[in-house]
Length: 370
Image 1 (cartoon, rainbow, N blue to C red):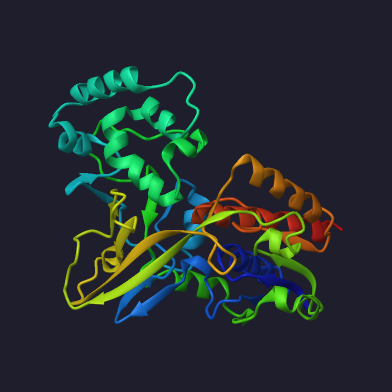
Image 2: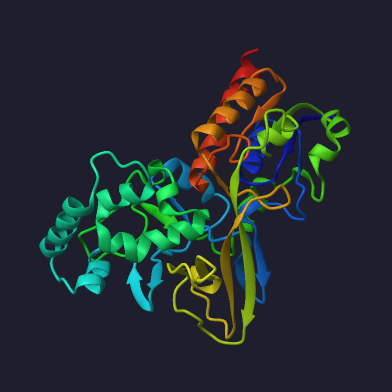
């Protein structure tokens, strides 16, 4: 008999288990995959840590969260500076002076700003009704058509005019020659990969992989007083109100006998005719010197129940459906729902850790006081 059965060994479940253990609670952590770590799991391929489920770059402004992860691993000084290829030309991301120089051959912020302002005035909308109108109103025609339109249509599998405006509330424009994608104070990749952090969090805690909770719900639930569920909330309630929708991804990993394939960890492919959205070259996350390399092509896909759920489609219909599941969840006193799939919300790593710490704090404060 355990105090907690934790369903899902991703960051949320692992952090919660770690916090429970610190308070002398017993936990059993289970995962349906053959490994621990959820989407941050790295597979070591000939000395290269391959981000099995897409690029994960840790970044945060929260010193407490930064200190928390640094208990388990030392971070390197990797800075995310992606590139984009559009119509055979290379551009820096996020949109900055290097991008504007490549687009218009401008050299000063004033020149770049003038072009963007003129284009926004000419092509923008007072009340943008879809993603295309929203983007034109934020950055004008050239940036939109070169670097946003086709990439976004490929990512979501729908035309930009059919996508809701809220997907891009803002598009950061920088009038500096700075290719650092994130503005956060702390950024890096754990030396030795993310598995180090997950192993540190779950050290001394019972775990079971290849174990699907929903297939053995009663038998597994009987093992603990309370459940922490990080799987899909709609699946927990047997899709009573229908399935919540997601976009999925497919990853094609390739091992190459060359030292350096693209010279950067992340290169986006903006054109619709290229079926993948980006190529990740994993060794560059850790400044690898190996004489071989591993690349991953990332293909966006229509989601089905057999595929991994990556990006929630948070439109009105799905949000109202999720709200119904939340109401059901409120009547499950012995189940704590948390994480990306249980909360139907896209989280960055630092946010998921903060969320798990908050839920743990609330839970253990409550159990101490009751």
